[in-house]
Image: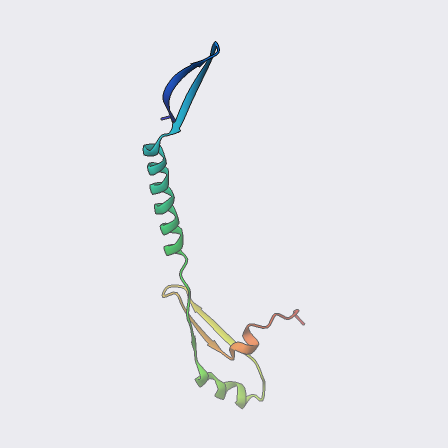
Length: 94
């Protein structure tokens, strides 16, 4: 299918000119494809909301340490965190 359709042939001073217009049916098919593709991409990008679990504080306090805990349940897609402030800091390994 061509993206342009011929509107008319025009003769002007012994030169053959062709006037083309966009084929809107072709554009509609492309627009529908782009719309469906972008909806699939957007719907596949979900935000994982982390559950902040402050009950884990007692384990860090009993050992007199300051740290963080992260658990990813891959089967359920859930994240459990303790002390997100430290968890999101990027540091070099010791």
